[in-house]
Image (cartoon, rainbow, N blue to C red; front, top):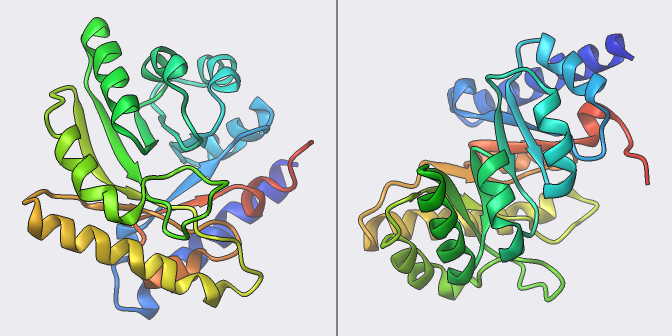
Length: 229
């Protein structure tokens, strides 16, 4: 198991570097978020031993059990839909919440952070494909949401995240990645904010996402292999 994981890890890191270099970007400007949902702790430890420290989970209840089992010093991102009643646990478990998509959630996170005496980095999730079944703020509503969140002193918005509609052909995801980058660029001008992070792209389409400006690519199955049901 460890040999295969190590092979996968180095292969993906090489692909990330090549994808960045192909479009004239510094490979160091793109980080891999190892999506460890439904993966046993030993698999995560293998990746940890390779020096990786950036991990993502999408279920709070699973993360509450898993993260305390890991060594101290990792950076944990929450990437799933977050209910307000899970905000307290998210504040306790995670360093970054990438999926803030409504003011109600931001307000609850602010409240829990005040009680905990902490601050948190977040990203605004944008529903770039307009899919009813997916979480995310509408592209038209991002500016208003960002402006409202800026009043929450415990929250630092560091960028945008998106999960575009799945397409077998990775190239078909390009317009959605481009759209997120354009939204980010516009917000930086109109709202005078610095949003350095673009979390977009997964196992099957991350080279295209990198070409369109991704700074974080979320890699699960290509790294860890198939997940259990």
